[in-house]
Length: 164
Image 1 (tube, rainbow, N blue to C red):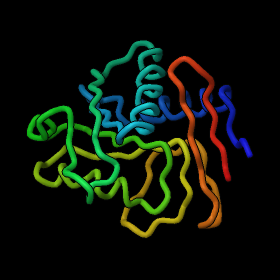
Image 2: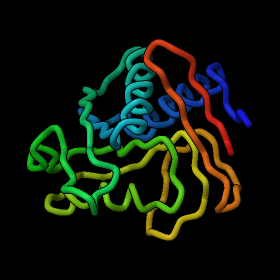
Image 3: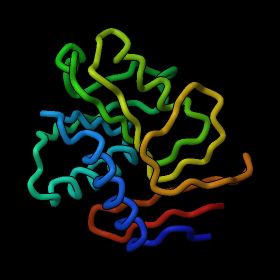
Image 4: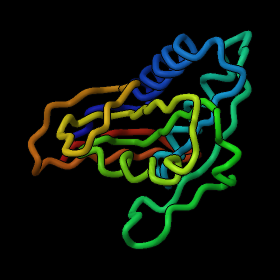
């Protein structure tokens, strides 16, 4: 079942961008870390919307964090973690379920002292079993543990969120 179509996803991302800017207006730079593939796609949509907000007083820096399965291989950032010291960081993913992915994404950030770390997701499922609070949520869903959320964001295609 489709729960968000292309237009609704765009609206949610625009609202998220406005909220993020409102809470970080006084920052000089915002480091936006997209978690693996789908989180990176959502991060790119957010950056696109943030850049359309004029005047944008913040420098945006985009970084990919991989992999999504940190127990299988080491977590890698596209930038040396030391360069994130005393910076404002926004971790972005497509769906937050248990909070495990966001929790593990913080692992490399524990070796430095960021100014602050915030989180943003397109869909929050509210089944947290890790100490993660999502700061910016596009859509909050009450689902069963057996239901699955699938976010599809194609570069040259339609966007959709499905619940199976």
